[in-house]
Image (cartoon, rainbow, N blue to C red; front, side, top):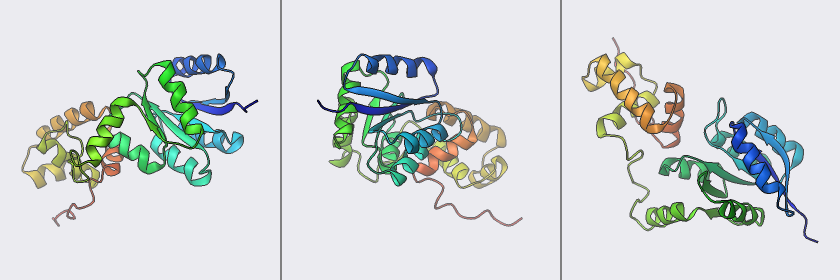
Length: 223
């Protein structure tokens, strides 16, 4: 008899964790060995249980799922990380891939798709939901290309502001750099937080730097 796939579920929403656990409980070939609510807990559980698959949420308080994935894969490369998230933005997909995730499915996926993804990742293969797979094909065939502008839902000005934020500039510094009022900068930041689905400046900086922003900014001018 084939051994059951051993999984760790990582999500900060108890109801979602419990729903996945209930789904897997009905499957004789899947065994949930731990449930975690944070990236830090995920790293500990992965080290302790050495599961076949870690189902990883991306946006959690404290350490992000991207950072947790990077650490887990870095120390235990045989563990397959399957990202299960609400976020389908291109930069999230590619950040997860760069961190070492083997799969990426959305929380709205059906039970059959999630189970197939778990079994595929456990077998050492990579899998991405059908909608994401189409976008990946478009990206690598040149439609999105490596030079595609990150955060395509932001305006040009919002990307300029985000780039400055990622480079560590203050609101007043950004206002001087771009010839804006501080109130306008704050308004742009509010829009950016909503569009990136982040709670604060720190999370925006993480997302921006993962997408490569903030690296080419000039140092602030001397006073």
